[in-house]
Every structure is written in structure tokens, then in C-alpha cells.
Image (tube, rainbow, N blue to C red):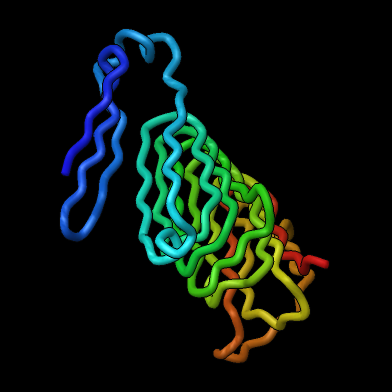
Length: 193
């Protein structure tokens, strides 16, 4: 099925097929969105349905805030901050220009990957994933629950001494892995209390 609503030249389109649903906001940039490209699309789902979904969000510019309990989240923006909340089995976030952060401590069970070409990353977990990878141009801060231990690789490429780890570390392959890397900023991997 397909539903289309319109405000000026901006159209909200919902397309459903056997395997997926797609919600899109598009237009030529005239009318309401000509001077202000901000807006909000809110998708409300029953919790049991949301926990089984893979959600992909892609946008060109503007802040992106996602607070949901999902199976998988894939989010990307060319320019704008991304703020995360909720829980998921897998999270993959990429930003061209902007920061990635959490609004509350999140729970990710399998893997969390975040990268920003020009910005920083500051994330806190209430439940640590098996694999965490945070790569940024600016500062990178990863807060994980104690007591650990974690397999840790932390590095600041420009300033090798600017990486600090305050969690218990191990080389045991079964321990959760945390990789944090910055091109020009500080790196901190800290135990949350």
C-alpha cells in the first residue's frame, strides 16, 4: 500500500511491501520547507512490533534523534548531530559533519558502530555490546558498565598520549571488545557507576 500527504512541495510518503515499509519526506525545497528545513517525522509502533524491526534512517542535513527499542538501527546523515536512546541488538551510525551522542544510557547486545568524519562521539551504555567501535575526528568518550573486563583498543592518532582507559582490561577473546579512535581529539573509555 502507499499513502502520500503533502504540505506545499514537501511530500510524506509511506510505501509498504511484503518485506518492508518506507517513510520518506521529499520535495523541491519551496513552500514551507524553503526557508526552514526542519521538521519531525514521528513513527509510533507497538513495543512488540518495534523490537523486531530493522530501522534505517537516512537524511542529508539536520539533527536526528532516535529513542526506540529495536532489533537493528542503521542511521546516517551528511550534516547534523545524531542523538540515540533506547535499545537494540545492533546499531550502526555514520555522520559526515556532526556529533554522535546518547540522551540516556543505551543497551546494545551485539554490536555498536559509530563514525563521524568531522565531529565527536560521546556514548554511554547501560548494557555493553559484544563489540563497540567509535571512530571520530574529534573527542571520543565511551562509557561502559562495570565491572568488566573489556578487550580495549584506544588511540588518538594525532596525540598518542591522549587516550585514557579506566575500565578493567583483558586479552580474553570472550570479553566484550571496545575500539575507540580519534584522528585529532582525546579518547576516554570509562567505567560507569
